[in-house]
Length: 397
Image (cartoon, rainbow, N blue to C red):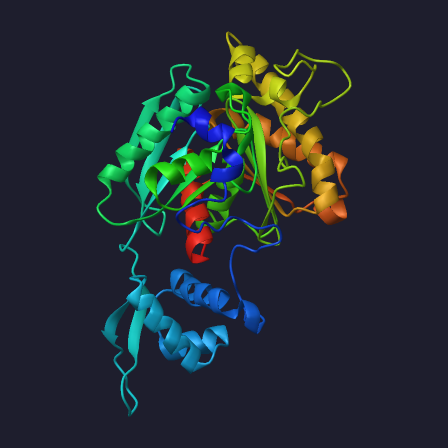
């Protein structure tokens, strides 16, 4: 079936998937931390055991029971099930100094599965990787986009995925995809103009082709998940991706925020200031992207001396601060993270953003706001795609 045929029948394929895929539900925190009501208990408590081992490392059954508040009988039953599923392994007995039978130690089997992560956010290439359960990359691949749009671009995604699946040396836990544009919770790319996608059911297409769980999200939303799991982001955080365009991913109380139309974080086409500005690709004047996207920044910096370069970067940082100030004020964020070229963002641009934020928000509440560069570099979307699969399939992050 071609991509266009799947798109025309998306109402059928979105629900007819051979594997159950858990998406990111509204109001669902990424990390389980306590018991729940009996009717929701089994799946939640299974994730709770996995989360304890994933984050805390080697534990005994008694340790897990103590740390989660679950009964030892419940933990033993869940551990037996998870060992049978190949997710947990026994490591042998703990050395004990007290009398009695030594406890058997357990850990997540971090090499039992691999995850396919895809980053579709770059304008010239699609990139992908095989990742383990800790987010470490073991293999990479990429395909040149070469201006492809619509079904042709989808087929390049399929080809890239196939290349990685064929390299996998362990079962594939799932496929995670960070895509540009507005993406709903069913993995349908509602709008990605640069790729010519409107209502493209990318999740269903990949699920049908490869028969494993697939999760597709906006690239900035994937990136903020990576920061939460692997970069130490606070539970209230905003990550700004600055590249071919400008977007943002939001976490509130450790829960991803998507918005009623799945467009939360689409700040690139917010007009900043009342003094006009360059014409944006969307048709408006003075959108944040006209000041801050990397192609526009590079054009403005071309041929500039050091002084003019600093002025241009500070001006871009001021516009970013103008866009972010009402968001910080409304959501009381504790941390904002920038992802993009460090040589452009870390310096006068970031300093001007901080200064503008402090001038435009209440110092007593927002003066301690942290603004920093991501520590995850160019792989942030790939690793965020892995977090999507970990959270969707195992309930851990």
